[in-house]
Image (cartoon, rainbow, N blue to C red):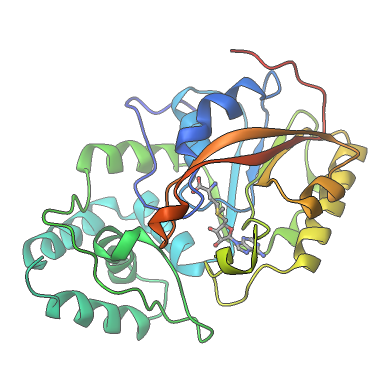
Length: 289
Ligand SMILES: C[S@@+](CC[C@H](N)C(=O)[O-])C[C@H]1O[C@@H](n2cnc3c(N)ncnc32)[C@H](O)[C@@H]1O
């Protein structure tokens, strides 16, 4: 893929977004990336950084199990002008002093299939105006976050959306479970970055509801197994997770280190602050600064 002309950055607020950890992630990358795989793409902080720096020589594969999120990327890639038009209308109609418009859009969002330009526009609008920018769904898959108290929410930045749309031009976007990644189908020289829902630190910090199902201990074990199969296939892979006894045990045979992260989305303000996270590599990389 070619580097986009202008700087592109994540345009969604996303729990676990990796923007502030980019310098550390960059310092541990392998030299040279052919195809790039990110099976838990979320707001795509690492992908947009690599794309802007022109570091991906082959094709990028961005997957996520959240169909509305993948639809947002598809729409932005294929129908940016129409999307921006709808976002401008949301921006005009949003009233920070009256939540009626927000709740009407939330109801419409939950009643619409996640495969239209309208759905993508509502997704971005709700993400930028909801409480804490938290995309959370209940057990029926319905988005249930109340309106946030932003006086003047910046709903979108047209310049950034143009650059992002360009960065997505030749990207494979797919609604998929991470288990669909098959090491045998990945070209030599490719790189995989995994940023799954984190193993909870304790029973009260269990934010795993980006999608209808939650991410269980068995999912964490499947992921560690896939990480090992990628190593055996010679595919360099990097993974982020919380720094918990289970994560340390699952990745003990790899290069695992604690890195310091600032938690930015937590409904309990008292829990914000620096906490260690795990960075795991299935290859030997000297940290570059
Ligand atoms: C920690 S977030 C990724 C954050 C991302 N790195 C960023 O910068 O915003 C985890 C993502 O995994 C997705 N997800 C949850 N379960 C999944 C599964 N079984 N397979 C694929 N994606 C899944 C969620 O929808 C969420 O977007």
